[in-house]
Image 1 (cartoon, one colour):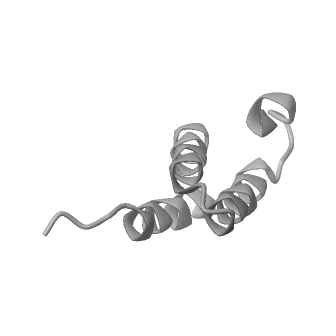
Image 2: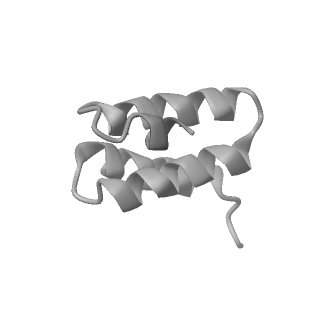
Length: 64
């Protein structure tokens, strides 16, 4: 997995955002959400985590 192989990579959070976007485009929404959740766990105070939280809201179906 990307985050395990490149744990010390300084731009890992950004790379994970890109991966999640690719997963979404490939219609693998559940995988994208998991990637975004992992990003948030690894870098909770990063700008990428803020973006990830917003993307999760967009990807999860609304419960109305």
